[in-house]
Image (cartoon, rainbow, N blue to C red; front, side, top):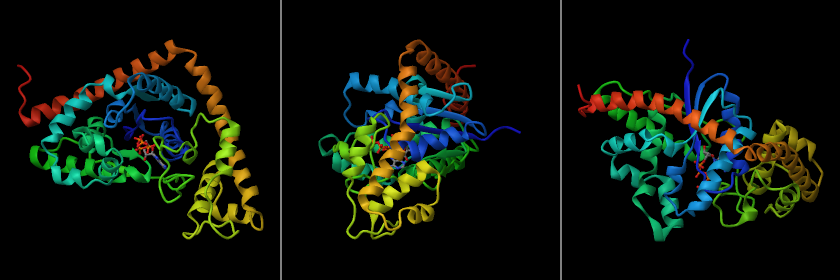
Length: 331
Ligand code: AQP
């Protein structure tokens, strides 16, 4: 039987956080044996907010190294840079004629980012979900493993696939978001009702995969907690609940077990335990990333063969799309 196809990506818009890791990449690793996987570095999405060109280039390669260091296997899945496969932009253009301005202007991320980057509300920011739909539909992906924040965008990809299929005949697989419990929404250490983001201006709000042990422990020590002294994952204690969630995601234990483990212990001791657990988990990833970064030839080979594989699949879908919509492709 053919394997199910999955697509997912991360933007090289900052250093990877443990939110990106727990919400996305760790799940990708678990799925690579069972599914046919396309995992991109979404640099085309990243430029919808201002990026420093040299930094963007550096982060693209660093993200590729982190993908591998987190356990993705370039033999099993296609790891590539989005802009290396031109069909992403080409399909986006076609889908732009199927997507409505009204529905794009209602997207939560568009509204949030428009507020955050009020001086640069560009067309790309609004078109972000259409490009993401193109990413997914290009590979006929049935499944998109993402964190909870991206669910709305996968739903738009579904709507566009269904609308296109109704208008032009069966063309795209209709994708489903796959949001696994545990790491689906990791929150900021400074504002625990907000999600942790790699582009957060406050570096103490996020734990980056490249943070050294002392930094990780210091950031957890400074994490905003709630009044009271009980260590429980209740809605009234978003700070403690977030730390418990992070602890359990790395330890692989249930919330109730962690609550039991820390019963009667103080916040200080608890935060130190969370910091040490996370630092222990990140250390081997960091060592592996450094090793991979020192072999640029290998990294470039991985990205080249990933892009070749993605290109072949993407070309098939785009040619079908062009046929359906009536683009003359020669005799
Ligand atoms: N805090 C989070 N908890 C769980 N999952 C998360 N993801 C992001 N933050 C969290 C998941 O990571 C994947 C990649 O995200 P992205 O880079 O495409 O964009 P994003 O969702 O906008 O991530 P960031 O870190 O917040 O980036 P910036 O700051 O540039 O906007 C997605 O699967 C996402 O769900």
